[in-house]
Image (cartoon, rainbow, N blue to C red; front, side, top):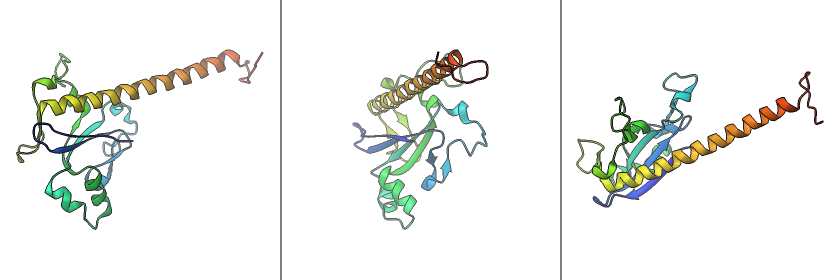
Length: 174
């Protein structure tokens, strides 16, 4: 299930929606694609910890027009998120050099992010990125903790079953 962070950039005054798209979530124009399927992946586990991070301009004139579209999906996306601007993998925003060897985290307190060179207003400030990445990182940590708890629970159940079952695989509560 996708997660959104909505805030006003304190530098520009523009309302932004930042959307996290996880495996199995719909995304793209009118939400017509499913994350994980387009890659032809049978097992999307390699993308599990790398959601897509989308940026939407909630104040654009195009978003206002699309809200009144006859296309219900387009109208919903415009109303809920705004006009799509840009999309990144989580690791691209998190790591200063995602392909490099250092693994250093991006320090968003030092710079903002240009989302589209073709439109002057489509940049977000350093302060906005610090807050947005804090919300994204918190969500990632919460999901990792839930996954860890689920794995522990399943592992504990398997261990308990193996410990308390007889050789025929039947439960032995003695």
